[in-house]
Amino acid sequence: MRSPSGLAIIITLMLLVDFYIFQGLKTVSNPVSAKAKIIIYAIFWAFSLLSIIGLIVFVNTDAQFMGKKTRTYLFAVIMGLFLAKLCAVVFLVIDDLRRGIQWLASRIFFKDTEAADFVGDKISRSAFLSWMGFAAGGTLFSSMVYGFSNKYKYQVKKIKLQFSNLPINFKGFKIVQISDIHSGSFTNKNAVAHAVDLVLSQQADIILFTGDLINDRADEMQEYIDVFSRLKAPMGVYSTLGNHDYGDYVQWPINGISKSQNLENLKKVHAQLGWRLLMNEHVSLDKNGQQI
Image (cartoon, rainbow, N blue to C red; front, side, top):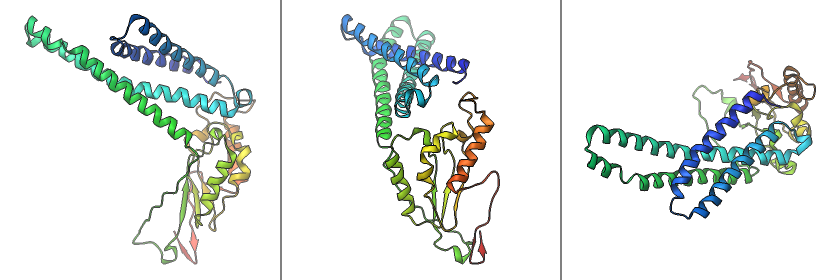
């Protein structure tokens, strides 16, 4: 379970964002009937309430109680909606700043009649910016849903590097770099195994993993040790830790395991995988007597 105070802050932020979004919603819903407004507002606040309830459930349960797949989708929906709302808020803030500047300018530079005409078009402009905000937020949310639904469609991006001082024996040296596995978010083991096959098909000289093997807990990897231990390369597999690997985003202990013990367990996971974990250190690579 995460910090109660931290959860309270997040919920407060969510409510503030929703309240701000609601002001924009009232602007764009002006033309509709009173009955339609009630329905629209009820749906909006119902989603807001469900998001908060979902967040509370998420932070107070684990995968054993809810199921990893359910937790993953729940978090994705909550986070996606929140980020989409933040995107919309940007446009609403722009509109508020515009109206504030207009109001101030009308009081300083214009006569009363001129001021009325100057501010008279604020509703149409406000509605336009509000619609732009909702469109941007909807586009962002749709993009996130698309990305989440295609998270197992792995691709290889090839980059050629040239160094004037590269030893001749390392010409054509191939490195495969992978990162951000976040095993706690996996729900399809076969799809993950396909990713490993894709890495192996590159026939790299060395494989580098650059952090975030897990979301929070070392035991997230237990189901996937047999999958990722297949990663092999002639000059080895080297790894390092990422920010999530340190367990900074959950409240410890969890199931009697402390934060420090979790980190030690994760180091053992790297060893089980056959990866050489680098902890603030470096190694030299030797190829036929030449080193980098």
